[in-house]
Every structure is written in structure tokens, then in C-alpha cells.
Length: 129
Image 1 (cartoon, rainbow, N blue to C red):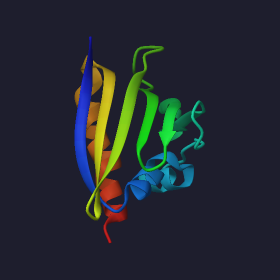
Image 2 (image 1 turned 90 degrees about the vertical axis):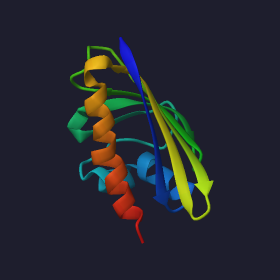
Image 3 (image 1 turned 180 degrees about the horizontal axis):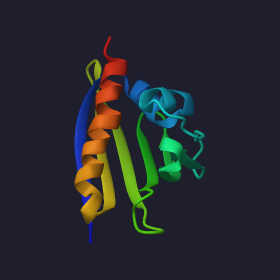
Image 4 (image 1 turned 90 degrees about the horizontal axis):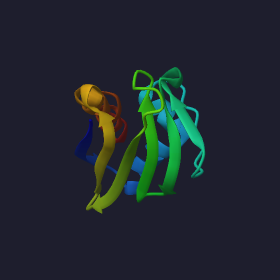
């Protein structure tokens, strides 16, 4: 069985600024503090955390949406989730609606917490001006 993770996060800044930290290799590297290999082209593969995280960009709509296949190295061989990031302007802020579909049951709690610890909290600090 697999689970779905849903998280809604509010960031200071524009949807494009938040999007860029997730879709641009240099900004993503700054965000997570580890080398990220990715391009801003749909269809291209990406890796992060020394290859522990890998997947493929399916949809890249700057400032609006990212859809990726996504997996962690300790997941069952060949098992990918789908990560969907949707960005909405809310005054001077951005609301990110994040959904990750098909996360292995026994990994879902750790993955959900990992997004908060390694992505959302550091991103809030980078955008806090």
C-alpha cells in the first residue's frame, strides 16, 4: 500500500521566487545545502543528496506548478511517487499546496517530516526578509 502526503505552506515572496528555489539547480543547492543536478526542462531527470533522491521533471510551469516523479533510495526498487507543487499568490505571500502521491506506507511519516525539516523551514528562512 501507499500513502498520499498533503501539506500547505505559506512563504514570504512571490510564487516565482518560491518556484525558483525548487526548480533551479543553483538555488535548490543553496536551499538544501547539497549539490543538486537538474535542469529547468520537462522530461529531464534530477538528483539530490548525492543521488539519494532522484526523479524526473514532468511539468514545469514557472511560478505556477511543478510535477515530478520522485523517489528515495531506500524505497522498493523501481517505485516512484508523484510530487505536485502548486503555487498561488496570496497578497505579499505565496501559498504552496504540496501533494505527494504513492509514498510507501512505511516511509510516509519520515518523508512528510523530511519535507518540513529539509525544504519548507529552510525555504522560509531564505525568503524571510
